[in-house]
Amino acid sequence: MKRNILFVDDNETMLELYRMLLTSERVRWEVRMAGGGAAALQLLATTRFDVVVSDLHMPGMDGVALLREVKRLSPGTSRIILSGLTDQKEIAECLQETHQFIAKPMQPKVLRATLARIGGLDAYLQDESIRGVVAQLDTLPSFPSLYLEIMQELASDNPSVEQIATIVAKDPGMTVKMLQIVNAASLGLGRRITSPQEAVQQIGLSAVRSLALSAHIFSCFEHTELRGFAISQVWDHGMRTAQLARKIMELERAELSLAEDAYTAAMLHDVGKLMLANNLTEPFQRALTLTKEQGLPFLDAEQKVFGANHAGVGAYLLGLWGMPAIIVEAVAFHHQPSRAETKSFGPLTAVHVANVLEHELSGFKPPGSQTAFDMEHLKAIGLQNRVDAWRERAGKLFQPDG
Ligand SMILES: [Fe+2]
Ligand SMILES: [Fe+2]
Image 1 (tube, helix red, strand yellow):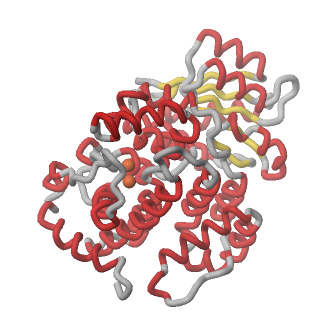
Image 2 (spheres, rainbow, N blue to C red):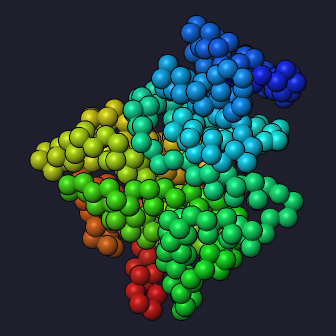
Image 3 (tube, rainbow, N blue to C red):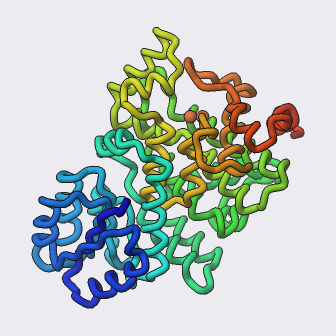
């Protein structure tokens, strides 16, 4: 099925460029153009768009005001803004209205990748109810503008550790969390890492982007407190699951970059819980109560209350923010990997297995937590006999000499 996309720009040449770029994608996208905010709103009144891409600076209604209207009229629409890095102030203003930024000057390959990712998301998360829940979340952690800077530096010809460390250091919250992550990940190193520079070096340029985002997301939720639900436990559980997931990838001799993806996905696998707990506190509390009083598995309780669960919600948002599809998929199906399209070993398997093992090992079992392996998935990928080996290695990982 074709999806509708609307480009809004007061610059004719840009609109022409978009049209050209999407010619080869005609089977997938139905492309419409508008020369400004007012014209865009007219189109929005009669057509449902899956994606709106708008320029930031336009005469009359600017991009921020337009996307605010799009959000109100059609909350399920993906909202993308094109902006220069010098527009920091405006970026900060439109964080709540925008799912993704594309930096100016626009690079065709970045636009193509962004659209492919959004198109691909539906394959995982066709569920309209997830979109419905996401649309109700209005105090999401803002899209970190530093993240945009990091992406730009990484996309440059010669990305440097120093430059990225300088960017990270601008955000104290992100720096603190990042150091925590790195120090937890390099337990065996025997020394503490204390500077962003060392941290970036340790993490490696390939993983720094996802880690910066994870660090940012968690630092946003630090002060949320809910009855019967500790944010710090989600963080600790995420960090330990991440270490386990990477170890499982290593044991199965997976490529290093895939192991890094598994690590990031595992760290963020339950982030949907934070989003639901923080935004929809009362219904989230109701789901917790259903679990406690009626013994309903937490996933079922979420499904009953929200019509969706934390795995889907978390994955959807990570996808909108531009996380790689392999990470989004691992988060989306971490409780039921057999429902995913991927039928081979990878980050999805590692995150699923690590999550179950972490619950087993830590004894951190919130009522109703899903602690069983999805044997259908493990059989499908021929690794059902590896469970004991993973469990044994996992047990050693958190011993003082492990
Ligand atoms: Fe979960
Ligand atoms: Fe979990």
